[in-house]
Image (tube, rainbow over all chains, first blue to last red; front, side, top):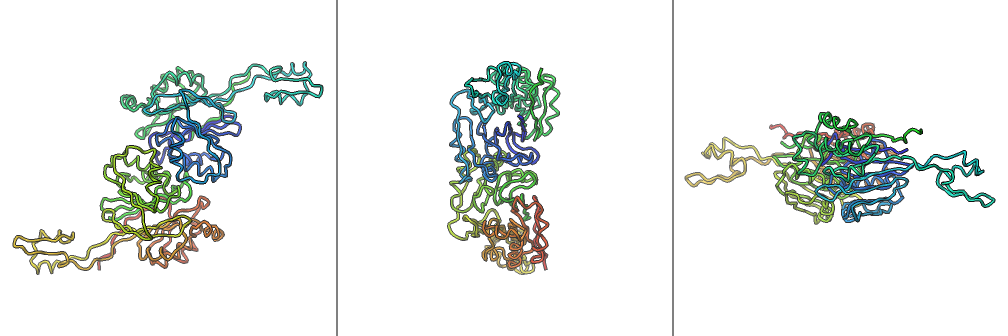
Length: 305
Length: 305
């Protein structure tokens, strides 16, 4: 299934009791890590997740707290005997910055594929997961991400019987394959599959002011992971000046985007007890959670009607 | 006073329960950090030590587990409002590697001074601490360090009275200053100070096979911090192949060097319970400790006779 783990919830610098903000999403044997600050590899180990499973690391931007853990992570991936290529994707400048950091990680036993975004929005697949990268509004170029998995339509067994499709082809058609029987009859998935059903979707944004693009891209997400750098209304001017977000602003985005859950993260080091600022956010969006490091969830398809 | 803290005890990669090996030594308001792997800044915060106090970072070598935390540490030093220059010292290649890593730490509010070692041994001062860097034997160029503080001789008050030295000059002479009284008489410290007494000394080596240079440089150290990558005799071949050290080899060096205490560190991630291999090491050198993260000690001058 599709599961996500918020490895850390800190912003700016790692703390002894709070790892830097980073998310791992896993589906069908593929893994996507979003952001990789200092000690993210420790947070991953703490959750018992092997770095070997990471097929792609997506970066929101290149402030140190989002990328400083890259060399250590790549070395741990090498040490876990990963051989398959790893995709590194992010805003322009990624290859230059990553190669600069990897000066201490020579001889990796896998290839690195770089993808730098050329325009404001970009979509690509990692395994069976679809990634959409979209611009947000920070003091440097910064992106948010939606990761979604699709769900095929319902299989119409009655129709498959009516068409006399051999039983052994049923599962192939369900997987989207076209089949030909010994008599030369061709069966295509659309003959027996209903319309694509609602899949699963998560959206992740940190280091940004609220924007319409976030509300639009997070639309109907099952989980919206969003920065809440500050909770105290007294910090609003600081949030605006540093282009970060308040708890209540994240809650407002969650409401506008009609998401199922909001997970706050990327707390300022000065924010020692995020829960104390939950009431205001929950008054705006009741499904707001002040995440702790390691918060995870296995997402399930909605019940069949 | 002179205090040291072993911030972490891990080798190779940081673990959720074990920081990477790194030592901070502090004396008279100056701080020296030896090695700075990923998350060393967390270990420092955990001990309540401000990164602002670090005047020099000394590197043994440039494997990632000894330098990957540099950008984050420098950013935290900047954030602690340090303005004074910081010395980075280590084997050849330091400036190139450090500048490469610091691609994500632009605009630091202090100058960086680089010192790359040109030959096998090198001595220099950081504040009132004297550093000696000496070559050890790893699979890349690697250095060990001794840090020592000196202790002036005893002040001879009887002699000062006999010479009729004004009282207000006594403390200046004790600090090593030359004084001239209103009548033009010149007093020098050697007139009233006894011979320099035994000071304090610590020695730090990781990532090396045992060498005569370690035994010689660690001679009479109050504390000898030495890698014990493996404890199990079954790992001896691996230790030799990877140019690391066994517990019992470290203990043998401690004995040869006549140190007061041996602190083992830089454990392999596979070594989950270092204490189980202590008996053999203690049979060779009874003052052996299987350090845990954060082990610290305030070193005191030996009692006056």
